[in-house]
Length: 213
Image (cartoon, rainbow, N blue to C red; front, side):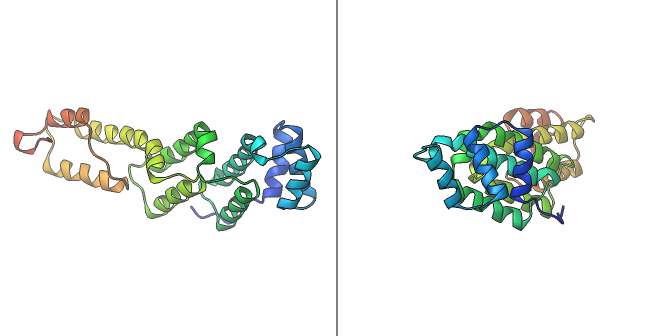
């Protein structure tokens, strides 16, 4: 899906102040962004007013801001280049390092990615646009490939179980249906190995010469 408009940080943070009840220091930082300067100097000035020595002291709250902006951007199941730039700037501004998001906010990230992945996998295939979108999701949350797979693999297993169920409705599985299964696995755009339970179920419908080992 191609987005035609991008969410601005100022617009999103205005809504954040209306909908959430953040600590006063976050209110001051956001107010400065919305109505004044959007810079590291502005953040440092607010920190001095609140006698804050290090942004790490409010890291969870700053990560909440990044996640809120990200969630708004993903409402249309896509993200623009402008939004990626805004996100990158926010991370630099708030001194958020790679790995911080998953370390502090893994539950929220898992929830967001699970929702997006279920939508992508609903038709049992992943097209080119959806594949690129998955790369975007991995990058904006600063996830390694293994971390992303740890979230999506259980969802893929559910889909594969559904596919197997659809193929085992008859007394046996034909060669064409086996080819169809392989096509589905390829179309899911991931390296997926059938687990023992899945192989066992399929083997009940296959001749000995074609059973999974």
